[in-house]
Image (tube, rainbow, N blue to C red; front, side, top):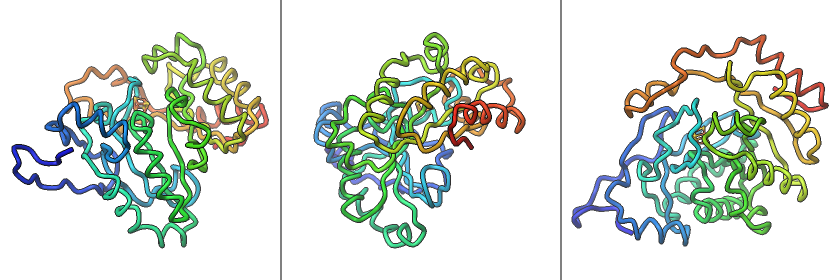
Length: 284
Ligand code: SF4
């Protein structure tokens, strides 16, 4: 695949970003469809919004995070809708991504941190993700996959050996509500959660608390009951909805339906955490 158009060298976009809230679009707009298909099959090239450093919330310790582009979900509250289209990402060879990670290898060891791949939905680029995790493991770096879980069946058990921790989003429980919030069916997410439990793969559940959408007691209780029945969940992170991504929806001319939704109060977050705790889970 070419990273240039009309045979003219194209300026390489910097992979690092201060944070994932930087709006990035059209970085792979000129990549031929065939080249994208080849990349997705081989995993020799991926499409990345950015690399960010210093995250303390995307797995244990301090993390380097690679943010992939491409997501099939359409979460109403998504704070990075520029990552939905794979072509918004920077085309990055596996070699370049590994070299980027290598820069942080020593620091990550000192800080007992690791490498997280998030998105977008990383498993839209499952081969690239597994290649990158394989390289990370060879460097002795802890690996975490942040996923909506719906494409979990793309990973074999052998692929999953390259993943030390799965950060699995459960976005709603009621099937209709899940479809309303994400545009997609919850069934594959639940199946993946059960499969991870079956192989005792460490999991952190992530639940985004959105007032009026995911905050009903019944909804939270049902998720808590399901999660407490799994044998591999180390913790539940309750993530309060926020408006930091609102500007991206506006910039991209997309209809944003949560304009008037206020972030939940700390009392609301505590109330939801206690529902998870009542089921014997660690919730933060
Ligand atoms: S799964 Fe994540 S990236 Fe995809 S739409 Fe939902 S919040 Fe956005």
